[in-house]
Image (cartoon, rainbow, N blue to C red; front, side, top):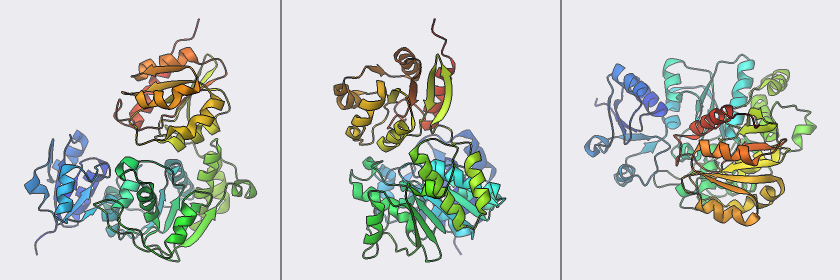
Length: 445
């Protein structure tokens, strides 16, 4: 019997992990990356004699696939993906593919904001409960590689909308949807409903014994749940498929539940109370001991690059919130800070509407520092507010400007609203550079 051919687009963590799992399961595997594959992943592929290419795609070697696993960062309008779609070759995500080979319980978290903190917190709780648990998806190691090399009984998985778009048969035992606010609209033809539909895919295939945990005060989620009792949403992107039905047990939560349950959490901000509530309910749904959950909420160390307190210099607090890549994430970060703010915004704009920040910026900001290759849209959005502004194009310039603008008692907040790819390798690189430049600041004389 001829082997089924799996072509993997993207040779990063998820691509390399999927390649190894697929080979072990008897697939003919080929990895193709338009960019450069890191040496660590090349070494993995060479060690297992898996064919790969980088620096471009060989169409003859890609378009003969029976199935394609596409890295979530690759858009459908990439030329090679458009050709795959035209040939009607099925495209799946790593999570969809990997889940075929495990019976582990899946705890899946998505949302426009809060998903990384909530995912990390659920993982922390389950570790404290001594469960055999792995962390995967947008954070952690490749799910496929874990299933192959270090299988777990539970996986806590952070899911982006891009991953959900190419998931079809996958079923979450526990699905958590934090919120839906405008984000990544450039990938959804600037249509909010398409993005909403993408997020709602997390409940597809769920059964009554499964749980769907969601923030009941969200603008979209309650209405979307009702809609799905009557119709199924269409495909969200050209490579996607129509959504499947799901009939889970619904577990809504509201902000007031935090105080009513008497919870305490190590992290600041109203949004973090929501994250704690979602994690608490997810752990409860798995039967974790109440005392362990409550203790874990207090001991949780937080997430790097998410409201991360960096240093205090000359009486000014510096906070790294580089993970805030959309407007709503910036808003909740501003809410969490109880001091005058010098706000750093900018990067690769994703179709942001900055007007929703005008009120809170006017009330809480001492100054604005723009950080991007092109800050034109930021000037148009904020200069009319009459605050002091600085226009910067590197992290060194940016931190220097913040140091000059901030006064004792202020907070300098890197909460950029935007993707990082105009000036930085990724969100982590932006946050690391910020921390490095803050560390290098010399005291004022």
